[in-house]
Amino acid sequence: MGKGTQALKNVAVAGAVQPPPAGTTQHQVAVAGASGRMGHMLIEAIRAADDCRLAGALDIASSPAIGNDAAAFLGHASGVPVSSDIAAGLAHAQVLIDFTRPEGTLAHLQVCRELGVKAVIGTTGFDEAQKRQIADCARDIAIVMAPNMSVGVNVTLKLLEMAAKALATGYDIEIIEAHHRHKVDAPSGTALKMGEVIAQAIGRDLKEVGVFAREGVTGERDPSTIGFSTIRGGDIVGDHTVLFAGTGERIEITHRSSSRATYAQGSLRAVRFLAGQDSGLFDMFDVLGLK
Image 1 (spheres, rainbow, N blue to C red):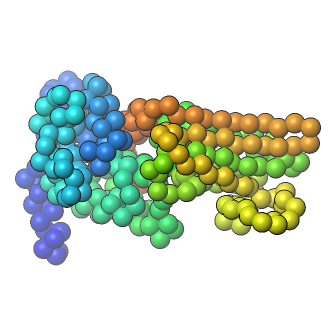
Image 2 (image 1 turned 180 degrees about the vertical axis):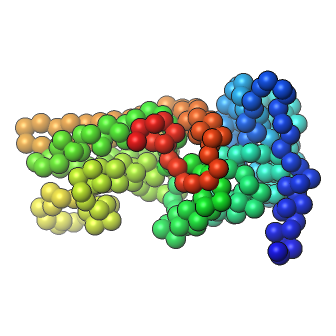
Image 3 (image 1 turned 90 degrees about the horizontal axis):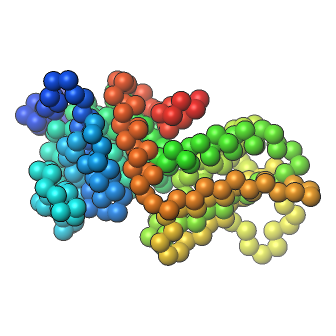
């Protein structure tokens, strides 16, 4: 056992999760990116939930929030400081909720694995190699990973699966998504998930049929393709529309988010689901019983 691993084990022992009072069940939850917009929404949702307690708060070392109470933005003292020390931030947690960047999430996940902390991952933009790292971690800890934690979005994905099977021939499929100016990846993870669900439903591979850019003389549209269009601007939380365009009619299935609160509430449902899982990689279809 290396020194780093032993140090993590020592932290785990020294900061073991404290059991809730007799007769109650509380999920001890840590939040990554605690001083960001999504981090604030998660902390507020945890505070409002009777069965959850904020047990840790992580952020990058350069964040001005480091050392401050994680709930200070609410005018509330949680007793949990924002920390850049991953092991210390997870020492009292049972589950980490992470909506950060791929590199940060993977660093957090390695420590989760060492400490036996489960994870809810809402981060997007992972490449295939990074996804394999996450799947490997899931051999030892339980993970819920989804590009969108919204309950409504995941119900929309189920509707798209049904629609795609019925509209597999004679309809061109286009996915249009819009997000705020600060989003760094495109298309959105949700849009890609929509494409994957549709492609699987009609027996295609999105890697082969996805079209992510059109410019100049593109030629006639290949009916087997699934097109993507991306919009970035303002403070749009997240809009997604899937267009099934046939001859004489078109069907549009749209989901619009007006608040990140939907992602926070879905994340807490994932936390509750993980309480019954020891290991494995799950998604929101598992959480919501949609499989």
